[in-house]
Each structure stands twice: as C-alpha cells, then as structure tokens.
Length: 199
Ligand code: GTP
Ligand code: MG
Image 1 (tube, rainbow, N blue to C red):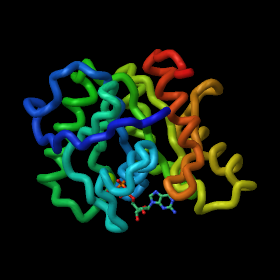
Image 2: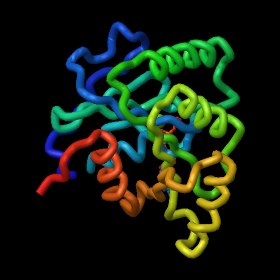
Image 3: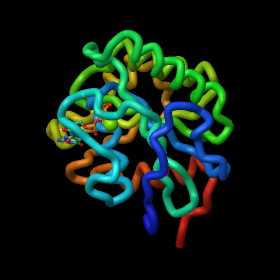
Image 4: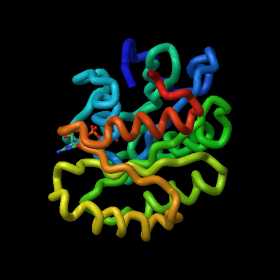
C-alpha cells in the first residue's frame, strides 16, 4: 500500500465529533502499551503521527487518522491499565461500546495482543464481544521483534487457542521496529475492505 497522505483528524470524545464523510473505518483495540499507536505509525510510514509512550494509558480518546482520502484508522484507548480512575474507565467503556456497536462506517477491527504473552481475560472478552456483534476482526500479534522467529509459531498457537480463533481466522505477526507484517496487514485490510489490489 502506498501511503500518499496520512493526517491526524481529530481526538474524539463524543460521537458528534466523528467524521461525516462516510469513509470506512478500521479500529485498533488492545491492552494499554500493546503497540496500537506504534502500529499506526509504522503502517503509515510516519514516525510519530500517533503519539506513543512507554507508559501505558497514552491514548485516551478515539483518534482518527485519514489515509489517502480512502479510509480511517481509529486509535483506541488501551484497556487493562489499572491506574486509570474508575470514572474515566467507565466513560471509555461507554464510548467504546457505543462506537463498536453503532458505528456504520466501522468495517474492521484489528485486535492487538503482545506476542510474548498469553492473551489476558480482557483480550478474550474483547475478542468474543467483537465476534458476537458480528464485527470482522483480524488478530495482530505485536512486538514480533521481541522474541526469536523460531518461537513465533509456538506463541501464536497459544494466542489462537486462548482467543478461540477458528482455523481460517487470520493472525498476523507484526513489529513496529522492523516493519515485519506491514505488507501482510495492508493486504488483509484491503481484502477485508474489498478493494482491488493496486497494480
Ligand atoms: P496506549 O495508548 O497506552 O493504549 O498504548 P499503545 O497500545 O498505543 O502502545 P504504544 O504504541 O504507545 O507503544 C507502547 C510501547 O511499546 C512504546 O514504548 C513502544 O515503543 C513499544 N512498542 C510498540 N510496538 C513495538 C514493537 O513492535 N517492538 C518493540 N520492540 N517495541 C514496541
Ligand atoms: Mg496509544
């Protein structure tokens, strides 16, 4: 995928602020610190368009990035970060639930899990929930550079099993450091959005 234009559009705190141009949206969900914002930057070949941090809890709103006037990436606040106040947590919960259940433009969810660790209860709940409401979901195992290639299969097997993926469900190994999985993920996104491959 040739990314010609990539722009940050808005940090939305309420549905009134969501874009109204009807472009398809790809949402990134996953634990805090799993690498959602880093993945966006790598996919867009932009160093720090999406703000990242070694401290969990960096992204706290729905952040929209418009790509090639063709689609949006929607960066989500991470879940599973204990230090966030309960009141804020419940606000996020509502915002996320409203978005995931009601947003017609949402065409694909990228569920990110850290390749090094078995999925958490929150990961399992999120994945099951997306399946239940019928959202097409692709699982991305992040930080592939943190373990040896020879252990990838073993680790993705555990992720598959714990999340309850079926045989034909896709899991893509990604690294924001090396670019591993970038092309594969773009192909998958294009396929899911039913675009023709570019020449
Ligand atoms: P929240 O916004 O808090 O939900 O986190 P996030 O999921 O957006 O994570 P973010 O992209 O901010 O990355 C968290 C930390 O992990 C940062 O220190 C990144 O540099 C690091 N990181 C992300 N992806 C990778 C990766 O593929 N490889 C390595 N080695 N580190 C990564
Ligand atoms: Mg983030």
